[in-house]
Amino acid sequence: MRDSFIKALTELAEIDPRVVLITGDLGFGVLTDFANNRPDQFINAGVAEQNMTALAAGMALEGARAYTYSIANFTTLRCLEQLRNDVCYHEADVTAVSVGGGFSYGQLGMSHFATEDLAIMRALPNMTVVAPSDPWQALELTRQLHARGGPAYLRLDKDKAGLEPAPASVVLGKVREVRAGADAVIFATGAILGEALAAAETLAAEGAAVRVVDVHTLKPLDVEGVVAIASECGVVVTVEEHNKLGGLGGAIAEACLEGGAKVRSFRRVGLSDLYPTIVGDQKFLRRAYEMDAPAIAAVVRDALKAAG
Image (tube, rainbow, N blue to C red; front, side, top):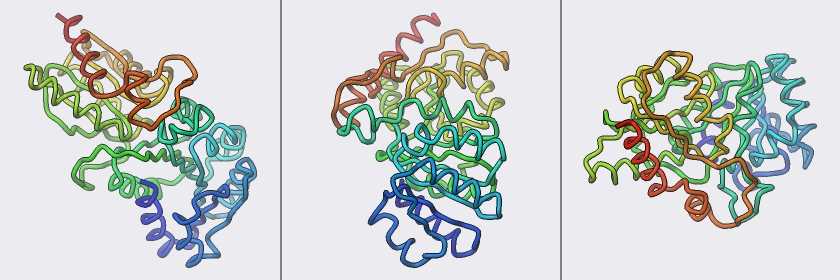
């Protein structure tokens, strides 16, 4: 996804001189061509993410369209005050780009996991929050975020859902149905959508038709679309590589309750309220923390049973 983001940003930088990419001393190799070809639109702020974000906000307030780039925890948690006070409060044109969403950097331990970022970014007023499921979708959503402007958070994953490219079906702020079904619905965000699709395939063999919906935009959430789908299916399961508190599950639950969706059963798949202590690759950690396809299928079975 990071290569797709850089491809889209390079295209945008060629036609929009306001574009500036600021890295926190990260992305060597990935960012090299951009840095060499557009030295006036590239800054390495060093290992100083707070300064990187404040610099981006200041440049944006002077007319730039700034993108900050680092590992997920560093573009969000380390510089939260600058995002809140400098970027969002002033509605500055800054997009915080995170590589390594969820367990992408699973071998590096808890300090490099991004499992609270979606909840925290959602809570910031004026912030748009996006988590693509595939590289081609990351490219398309980068273009749409640029056109939208304002504060934004783009969470990129090492994994991918594996869906065929369909850029025309991706609209910022709208959910996207990727598998039909009426017995239950799985709302998923990010590349873990691939695990949700595998779970739906397993359940289909058992006679359950499970719809799968891609929620690439967590904020602004497509409340109308979510409520309509949840009411049609009645059984709702959310899937995210993130803490269950405040992320996709919370957003979908809020939408369903406030929108009056007729939901008979609701479940969330995600990280429980704890700090992960296990180290391993992304697939291993999904299995360890019960977020892989078999675990998702088990949760859907339980939700269907509870609905009667």
